[in-house]
Every structure is written in structure tokens, then in C-alpha cells.
Amino acid sequence: MVAGLMLGAGSLLNAGVLTAQMGNLNGNSEKPKSYVIYDAEPQIVPAGKRSVVEMRFRVVDGFHVNSHTPKSELLIPTKVDLQPVAGVKAETAEYPAGMAYSFSFSPKNKLDVYAGDFTVKLPVVAKAGQHEIDGTLRYQACDHAACYPPRSLPIQVVFTAK
Amino acid sequence: MIVGISLMLWAGWHNLRQRRIAMQLAEANHVVLTPAQPGSSAQGDDAEAEDPGAKLRGKTAPAFTLATLDGKKVSLADYKGRPVLVNFWATWCAPCKIEMPWFEELRKQYAGQGFEILGLTADADAGNDVIAKTAQKIGVTYPILLATDKIEDAYGGIDYLPMSFYVDRNGKVVEATGGLSSKDEIEANIKKTIASGATTAMKGGE
Image 1 (cartoon, each protein chain N blue to C red):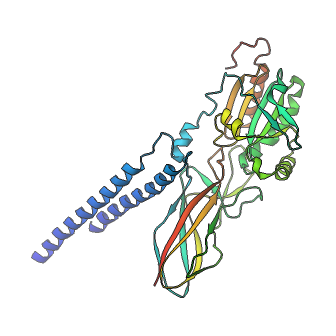
Image 2: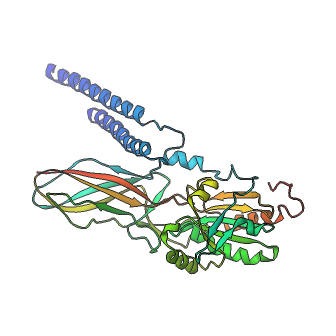
Image 3: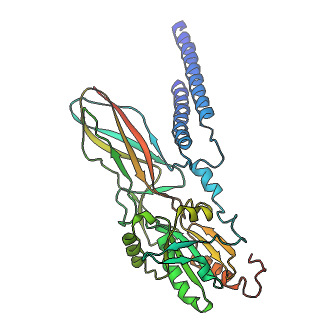
């Protein structure tokens, strides 16, 4: 019961935070649309050891984005670009595998996409302390029949090395 | 026993407090985050875009003069008297590349009635080489023009692709569609466009 109530409160809080991210993004641009949300929860990793920081994203329901390795060189891959930061040695980000998707009227034409939640992993070796890595997620979203122009979502990866 | 009851009471109060804080935070976020205008979320945008052609249907198609990949100028007015499909697409648009080969087939099929297609590339910044290579790979031989922001605005903003405007021989937008349609639906719209204005310029195409 107690756990249930606590969980309930937590979910409510999370929902607020998610909406906050969307709302802020919407408020900052003239044509405010975001099809991917970044879950900016701070993380803790061991200091001085190779460890993995996760960048968790959610594609808004009803939409999908190309995976990091779409099946055509003309499609825009989902890609994280991070700025270098003192005290953090970051390796190349690791992307999840996509899932097969085809548009109606053309079931044989398979695309490789992310839908729902997806996590990009960043192997790092970080000095003790709090770190903030600024970057962007570049993606191109589509729904069941149409595609939307490529977008860049600003992100900040926040983690503490202890 | 007393300790147990106290603990339960404390837990209840603690949870209630946590819940209130969470509610307040959510409420605060909600207030801050109310969109300034309708349709500003991805979902809202989707709903708003359900009938993107509503504003142009039945109206005169916005005029344009645009450059082809080899630098020639082409105007919509050049096709006055012919039914034309104005199709916005981009090299990164997967559903566009599904329907473009259908367009090519239908163009040949209805060429006898003067039907033509103009492919307006919405990602002109991709570069002429990439656009030309893409069009060639898809098998498109109809004119490819480099769209400008001004023309996209004139056609309702082109928030997503593909988007098609069926313009009859009198320059009127008979039908407008957003997103991938079936080949049958595209052909039906082409037939409607060819029929519209065939006898009288004032007859509605709906």
C-alpha cells in the first residue's frame, strides 16, 4: 500500500517532468514541435573507471524515427553529438538496433526505426565530481503516412562520478 | 502494537505529504507548460494537419517560378491549360519515394490528356547532385524544381511530406492531400483533375 502510494506519486512527478521537457521545447521555437523527448535524469557512475552513461529517449506515440543505421544512405540517421567536456573521456556512443517498419501501401519496403523508448549508451571514464555534457540528438520523424523535417533536440547529459 | 500503529500513521502522513508535493509540482509544471497556441504539440500538430489542403481546395493554386536542377526557370503558369500535380517531396522522405514511381507510371498513362507532374523538392539544401541522383534512382523523369520557403508558405507551410496539390487546367486546386496515399486514390485524384475544368472553368471539382 505504502509502496503503491509512493509509486503513484513518483509516476505523477515523472509525468510532470516529461511534460515540462516538451513544454519548454515547444515554448522556445516558432514552430514548436518535438517528436522525441529526452529523459534527463541524473546518473551516478564510478569515478576513474570505464562505465556507461545512458541517454534515454522516448519517441512520441504514433511516430517513429530512423534508427542510427537506416537502410538507405538518403535517410537521416538518429545521431547524438556531444561536446567535449573536461574530466570526461567519452568513447563512441552505442546505439540500439532498430526495428523493422513499413508504410501502408508498401509492405515490402522495410525501414529500420526506433519507436517508443530507446537508449543510447555512452562509455565514459570520468574524474570524480559532477559532469554536464551538452549535445544534440539529430533525428527525422515520421508517422504512419508522412514524414517531418529533420530536427535537433538539445540535450544535457548530467552525471556524477563517485 | 502502539509502535506499529504510530508507524502506520506516520507512513500515511508521509505519503500524503509526498503526494501533495508531487501534485503541486505536476500542477506547477502544467501551468508553466500550457501551450501558448493550439496545435503546438506533436499530437496537436498532427490533428491540425489532418486536412492540410482545406485552405487551398477550390482556390487558385499559388503561382511560382522555380529553378530546375540544371538552372532553368519553370513556372506553374507555363502549364496553364493542362492538369498538373504539384508534389512536394524531399530526399529524406521515405513515403515520398514510395509514391513517386507511381506518379511516373500515372504520368505516362495520362500524358494523352495533357497531365503533368512537377516535383518540388523541399530539401533544396541537400544539393543538386544528391537530389538529381535520388530522382534518377527512383526513376523519376518529370521536372524536379527546387522549392523555396516562400512557395512552401504559399502552399500552407508544408509541415510534413509528401504533400500533393492537384491543379486543374484552369489553375484551380481540385484536391490536396498530405501523407502517403494509395495508388488508386492518387489515380482517382488525377482523373478528377483531368475532368475538372474540361468543359467549364467555373464548374466545381468536388
